[in-house]
Image 1 (tube, rainbow over the protein chains, first blue to last red):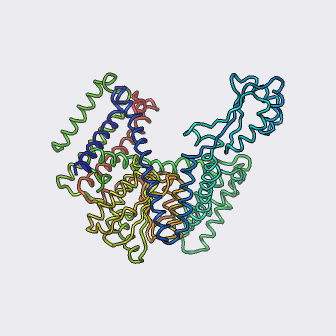
Image 2 (tube, one colour):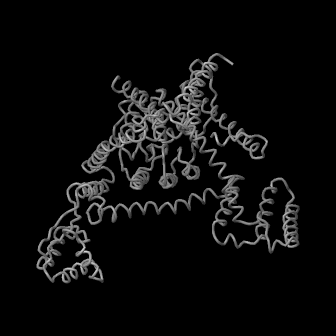
Image 3 (tube, chains in turn blue, cyan):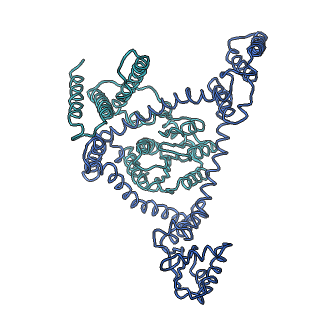
Length: 343
Length: 283
């Protein structure tokens, strides 16, 4: 109990208070701990913990294959993907490159031509300038995934250069180096798969919007109207909608709000159509065709919705969330909420 | 005014006074208001925790999303299907993840009680370890440690969309009857919630990520909005000291509202030239 509960709790309280009040203490060491060390400690622990997760994933997938549980075939793919990533990350670098030096007299133009051809460059003179400008040895600007491919290219250059070396990018850096197997896997497999999942979002947004915008009650109608105005106001066509169309929309909106209170439909129709006619006559007389009022401009209404009602709502939420985070953090720091240590 | 209020007020003033005296030497310059705010919030919350501990009854309004937690687990049990709990894609350094895990403890207690199967896919190893500890404790508390298995909390991937794809796969294959999304979410929120919706699961969500709340409101049956999510662990545990902190939090909100009104009024008076005191320069 002491090791599992009391000591972790003391660490939580100690580090929590230090991190909170460390922001106010004028001391370099404390500031350094709060700004850098504490977060780095967390990163280090999290990095070690990744092995736990990876092993757990592997264990579950292997059990599924061995016991031939339902849909075990998918697990083969998961294990194969895992093995490939480990192989690309720890055992096979790729990212081979060639350096040349001591080019024989008069052969510079030939060497530049061969390199330019390999790099698909039209002007060998640029390569020649770069070779001449290099101090000791010139690194050819191409990474080879396999040593075999690199050696094939080296064979072409060997008769013309004195020194030619095959090298690889250092371990660790290779994962972010173009031309390594890991990088290839990331760009050609992980990125497109991630993008595919992200692209699904567009369809999900459409289906969710359809449900949200279905007119069921006053709130849903309000959401629909606000949504339409925002959509129209953010596209160029919104600017082209004349004031009288907005007036008609406004009168329909007023009619929709008034409808539940007016039982006689003919009176409602009279109010709405009368309102539209009055609006249009009044607007024409006031010269709104030349200078329409801001209130009847879709982009301006859209700006107003965005800047005031929407902003007020989101700020209210933000304050609530911030206070919630403060109160939860406070409960944890003073050791009142111990649930994160296991109940 | 009772004695405790006076004691806490005096303590607040002493600490603030010490800060002002030591500003530039021991304490950082220019953070006076921030320090006072943190002190005020902490003291207010602690004061109400103390009051709750001494037996004062705390009223809490009903939060439908939290009330529905047990119903959702019960429904899954009746249908003979599993319960899926997604604690978000962030690590334990996020308060939302901690809150999500706190609620996981209560959900796990219900699944243990009803003998429903629980599935908790996670995207961070530390969350996996914490989640296992919490579930184990809950199953023990419910008197069913035999039903607990480490495999119910399992790791999928650190990668955002790989994790989303993994969870979606679980949903499509296992068709859980209840899905909980409680933690910190980003763009994957709607992908998960819409998939849950398509399989007909009862869905309860809660997050502190502002941008994701509308998506959850649209796709889920219940959503814990804003501070509702953070009060969940206190609400469900019914422990007086935790309930006291919620009241303290509400009082702080009241103070914030009063401060906002005061700031608007004072700034208005300053702008019109009625007073020379510029409140904005202090904040």
